[in-house]
Image (tube, rainbow, N blue to C red; front, side, top):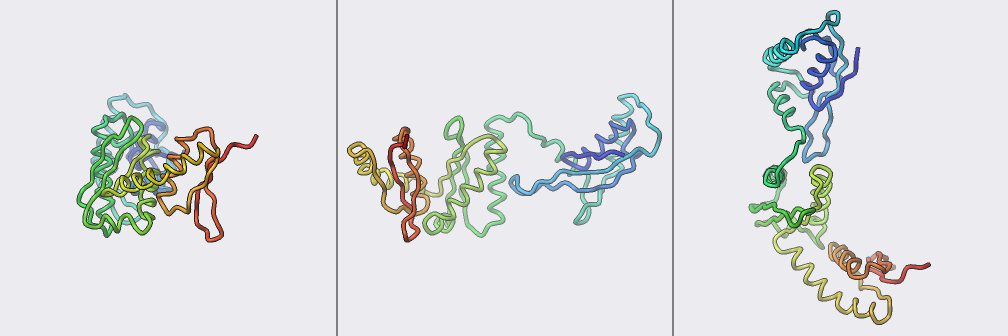
Length: 255
């Protein structure tokens, strides 16, 4: 008996058949865990089976093996799962979506479709979803619609949560960072913080150090990123005051 782990149940059965030199219908197997596609890359599970051959190991010609496997796929058109029955064609289709080289256009289409699917489960009216390349390392995701303000949330807390969710899906899967824009929220926030940081930057140049006023939500992260880019040789970090408000300090590194 062997434990086989694969992306799908059908792939696990195929792998077991190859290892034992028999067809799928000549396997004895127990499903330990069914695969799960998850949602946006989260909650994915692989299929796990314990398998053995019903007959003594034999060698089949390669073409005969392929024919046997194809016949087994057709015969096992329905496979029982944890929550009912699944068409085996779903497993075969899932098997064909193993990560391969994709063009930029294919990546954009795939991500756009999955974001649209995500918003189909959410109570926000967002009717404009656009994905494009911001630069070679960054995807630009633009959302707009009737409920844009609700999606941003007070002090941008929903914006931050959504940005975090998209990054933790897109970066490990496709290898890109993201720049999320909802209506003109990010643009307006960046303009506001640029104006405010002029005085802080001048103070650092004069005194060698400075600190910002307490900053809310996404403003704090935008300011931190801009200050670190402007002063790469300075120590720049968050601090909290007695009211648990967050501000940024800029100082020299201690040696």
